[in-house]
Image (cartoon, rainbow, N blue to C red; front, side, top):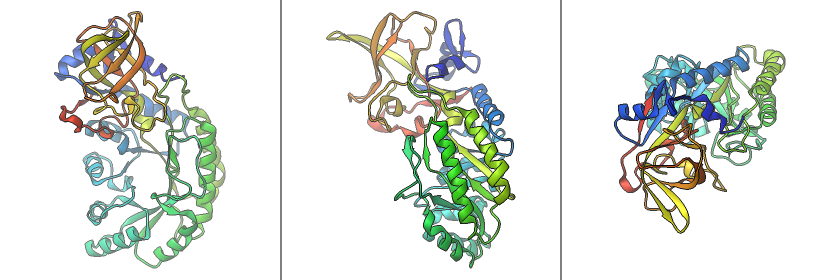
Length: 408
């Protein structure tokens, strides 16, 4: 399967793309204005069900809220996943507003402030320590509040994961504690009153190579086994990270999830059962859960020709969906899957550049894309918009209104 196959997951009703059973024009009327992000509740549920089917039953699924912090999405997922990971106290508040227990929430990220750590300790979540400074601060906060903090060590591994869209482990990093320093770090922690649960290793994100993910998981378990010898108590928490990617472009192939599941089962049956019998084993996913379940919808304002090129101009742009413009991690710009949502069954008749409403040539949502005859007020849809869309875009740029978000 490629990125284009994502479109097939959405319903088509009377020639129009549908979300949550609502044809796009009716959904736009219900929302009242464009642009907007729409997330399909059915697809979210199906994605978690797929993970449950392909991964070992003992895996603890954690949703990384950073991928999409919309409260309604997080609320929906709270009944489907086992735990949440947050990267700020803003995300922490969203997580705590759900039925998810606080001891099933982890807080990771560099440069946590004393105020943030205080909120986390008071809430009773697991703080993934990124430095000795954090450990000292957490200890002092716990003593002040009369709370024994729950902590794990985020480990910067001594290996890098190839093929990741963004590398977050191996070599010098702002993330985590270097693996060679962890034994001494644990020795220091054994002298103080912290509830040290285990380890979190996250090497990289957006990886479509199952073989590379499997190798990284094996190396992570090997590393954790070595580090566990310095633990003051048995390991009760082992977060293997995630990094599962989704296909964004035509040549991308979907991740072989079955291969990943088989590898995890082998790890369970061998080293994990032998060395970590008390551990809660966590796979932390964000993009893989929500990315393909959302769309960005923007309305055509004008169509014009310029020196032989057709331009379709819309009321949205990179200020809402930066990644689709190619300005969020792409070295060579490529198009996200794009369609005219109210003309899904019409034949492609022309090639156009789809551009946003901002005063910059960077505001390009689709270059040379095949489309049917486009008219003013048509609805342009960008797929793969469920993760790192609204929250990862410069929404204040040029002071245009923000996009609306809905879960349908």
